[in-house]
Length: 621
Image (cartoon, rainbow, N blue to C red; front, side, top):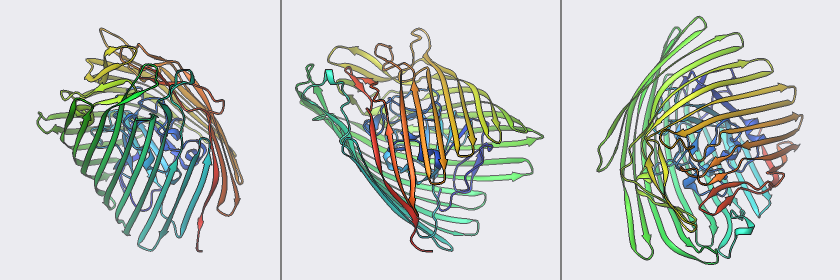
């Protein structure tokens, strides 16, 4: 979306933002994280600030501050992940998912410059095709305002520094906004102290990200262009293991009252070094060097028609992705792979109201093809209904969705420590069949959501363990025969004067089907959080607990990751004018918790604090 964003939505609405002028109704549980919540939740990047959303999780428990970018795929409702995201992330209507691997570079987005985030769990609409099997996130940027200037500096533990700033202005028919963010940290050791050796170093990241938007609008017509760029370098926990990424995305959007069309082009270069580590962790040997260039071009269009209490939304999309993995394997030679992937689809969705009832139906026809392989065509229907009366709403929906394997899963081998995950050019698309039912309550002070869901998974792409030894774990991406996840999710929000209390819980029983019945890796059965925020005059104080149950690292449930809970606090105080001071502390009690085995245990972030000053105001009146 470009130019001015719509006003912050009321929590009672049931629609999601698709583009500048297009909203879509959905019979689903929709969570809106507003700008106050984004400020109150600690975290450098957006992934950490959204962990209060039920079911929100990356491939592993680690933060994007230290995690390898190829493990930053987003999963909702316990669908699991092989690194690729099963959730579509849209930033002002443009896909944020990496075109080659499906993961998300959370470093591209400054959380402080978002107006809100809309989270839809489940594939309850037919709008989106590939990547939206588990749901979707819509990131809505702040609107341009006259002569706005903002800047901030923060420093913290482990030599952490961040500088960001930007400018925006709104004319009669034009708007301009720019943002720039630079971050660096020494990070922390991801191997426990009693297991470290001479090869172990801190895992950390340095990055620079920025974007510029220019919009022209006249009446109901709007046209905008946007450029965003990212350059990051990561240390992955040993002397040799590093990776770096450089990417740029150019997009354009035209919209009027009932019509919107957008296009985008992304170019990316990813580099990674991998090593073999001795059992005593005193030495390591460079084992391979990867270079992964990729590019993607896409276009999408939407048209909305309304008559009385009936609405129709139709449209289509086309994406072309080209990417290659060039790998020098030491000392044996080269291992290369890649190709071109085409995806094209069209959809129609209808809803109509009668008294307190609203009926939904939708259908998507989608085709996915990779060069040198047969194409696959999918029919994805969806249907649902809601009934609302006074302050409550009941909802139910059924749907079918899919995800095609990414070029990364098909052609690129990956190594984390001494755990190797092999590619598989023979992967088939995975499918899901889902159903959910729930109730929402919207009172003057209270809001609450509760619901149950079931998702059956066919040909789920997962990392299958081939062999295990003390020095090497070998896995390969394969299609599991059948799997299913079922569960209950609930959230509650209470407001009274300057006080805001939030709590959320997800139960997810995710298992492979016969004969193994093992748990899907990287999915805890229980996760929840509670946040208390107090805001009065010029002061904002917030504290919260995030908890995660036990989960397994692998498909055979050999490596067990115990549950844990962490405490976060933050404070912000306006000093004068637009100047404010802030302090955040994550993992306040310095709890040590496991995030992975490869096959050595890896630990998550220790206590980390950041503090600084921010100025946000107008330079002219």
